[in-house]
Image (cartoon, rainbow, N blue to C red; front, top):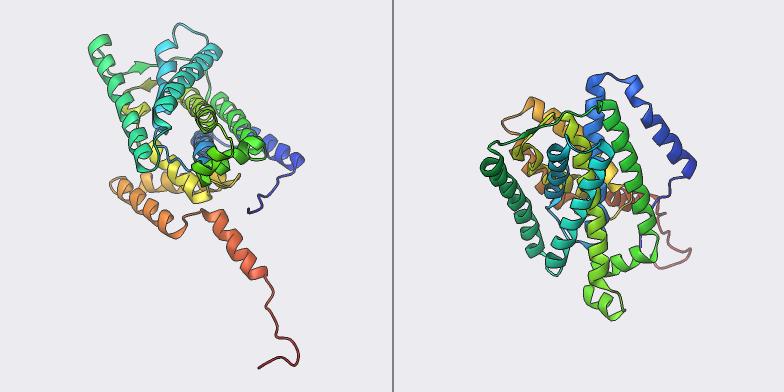
Amino acid sequence: MSRIPRLPALFFALVIGALAFVPYLVGPYGVTLMIGMLGYVTLASAWAMFSGPTRYVSLATVAFFGIGAYTVAVFSESLSYPLLLLVAAAIGLVVAIVVGLSTLRLAGVYFVIFTFGLAELVRQLVTWYEVNMTGTLGRYIFLPVTPEGIYWQLLALATVTFLLSFAIGRSRFGLALKVIGDDEVVARHCGIDIARLKLALFALSSVIITLVGAIQAPRWTYVEPSIAFNPTVSFLTLIMALLGGANRLYGPIFGAVPLFLLFEWLSANFPNHYSIILGLLFIAIVFVLPRGVLAFAEEHWSRWRRPAIKPAAGGAQ
């Protein structure tokens, strides 16, 4: 098993403290950029928390992200903001349990197809309800939440997600999940409760993703299904996690930060070709860096550090 680098607690605290002061050092555009970056760091980390060890490729990210955003939009006028986040998390948890109980028995391409269909089904249901029941296609959000407040909330959620991934990866729970990812038959014979472990981790990951959507919802002011349930969110999250390495603790961070900046530049400079470039980049990552950039760097670093074997004196020439 490859060694996962350990980040000293003091250095980690200093990094989080420095990031907390970013809004005081950058302008409005910088805060907006950091909100988007932290959002995808958290999404990729939450996705990798489940899909990394279990190797279940989920495309349902945007379904839970949209549920969080729409929960805030629907109840923003009747509930206080902290209660809104709790309600969004509760709804995300219930949906995750229902979906997990019915789909985690699937594997491979069947699970991928189902999760992609789930995201589209939720979007269509919300659209139908808005058009036929409320007579509108979107909702306005007026909450006293500043961009700086959104940034600090996402920073806190990203920190909690990272610490949870750290704790799970070094626990018996995380070891059992890795066994499940390697071979579910072996895991079953070892006495591991596969269904319960997968369901628990899928629910935890989904709640975090739901909270990302709920926290970011006030920045849009106006939310409609095409915004909240944009399938690009699922694909970007997947690409970011795969680039960094879904099985590495820091993988989602190393994948999300550079790719988010690249996607921002591409969407601004090549808006008509953005989707094509996104697809080509995804194919390139799968073929060139199937295990992520961190695993690629570790392998080549080990080869470079490995000393050359010298023939023994007097040996055969």
